[in-house]
Image 1 (cartoon, rainbow, N blue to C red):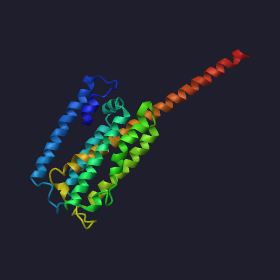
Image 2 (cartoon, rainbow, N blue to C red):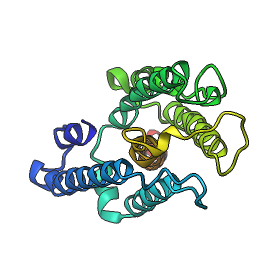
Image 3 (cartoon, helix red, strand yellow):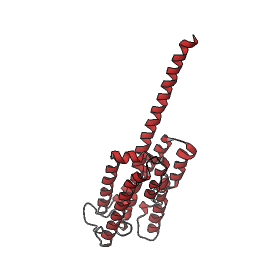
Amino acid sequence: ITVLGLERSPGPTPRKARLKWVIPIMGGVLLWLTGLSLLSLQGVFANFEALPPRPMFTVVACMGLIGFLAFSGRFSRYLMTIPPSWLIAPQVFRIVVEIVLWQLFLHGFGPEQMTFEGLNFDIIAGITAPIAAYAAFGQGRTRYNLALIWNFLSLGLLINILTIAVLSLPQVGSFEESNTFISYFPYILLPGFVAPYAFFLHVISIKQLLKLRKAERRKTNRIGQDNQASAAHQAPSAQ
């Protein structure tokens, strides 16, 4: 949904140029999700004695791709054509994720510490995502600092639940209730796609916001310098 939305974004980049990113990303995501699903159905991730825990490999692979895109010059240029709010508002999906984790706990399939009844407060990021997007950029506003603060706080919430999930794995055993459900389909998609997707949105949003804020400050300084030069030029004439 996000990729399709970016393809239709009102940015200055021509639609044909955006398709060069959209089509490969969509194809890669579909292949990745299919591969993860097939491997989980074969029980590949359900070896609870293997070290490091096999579900962690899915996270590492996604983080590698995120790092590649974050430092890609071509992707960075494309990133600057996307409306900033479009990288914040989609994080509302995290509400659904937290409800799923909560239902798994209520039915005895997931540990309490991974829900909002325990130590997971990531639902706050989902609830506040559309609010933050509107408060920062609604009605023509450009409150980059507000958006950055939201991103860093919500990223902290995401890192918190990722840490809890790892510590809850049977191989680690930091909690009495173990996290085993993520080794099975469809829940392998949580560490293998959903959490990295939220992380990816934070990374590219922060990168975009820092660049936009820097550009705005340069513009403000340039206008100030022009005003000073104009005032200095007019002063002798007045005399």
